[in-house]
Amino acid sequence: MVEAEYILARNVIKLANVIMTIRNREIKELGLTAEQADSLIFFSQHAGASAVDLKAYLGVAHQTARGIVERMAAKGLVTTHVSERDGRYKTVALTEEGRALCAAMAENGTYTGRTLLQGMGEDEKKQFFSLLTKALQNITTQP
Image (tube, rainbow, N blue to C red):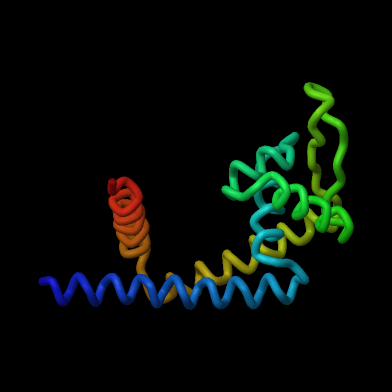
């Protein structure tokens, strides 16, 4: 059984590597870095968020988060405005171009997911999702 568990872990790593390779290629074709792509998705899901919020989400230094926001603003993907709740912070909002890139990333992700699940029946897809969710919970709750 130990060998089967090792092979399973290796196959999960291979799957993750293939998905990351596809993701990185698609992101590069969109003219983004991985951090910018993750940040666009974050800001699309968290209206009124700031670079401070992005810092916590990405687990990076404040300077790094500010730099990401500034580079995306320079590309015309986001705009910043002084927060109505706290004048010390700037909120970040996606521009039309930023929203279009988010939509393109979602489409690419959907295609990758569809490709991953092709040949599986509905019950198999549900079982795969359930087992994958359980495996992620198991591995992320380890001390």
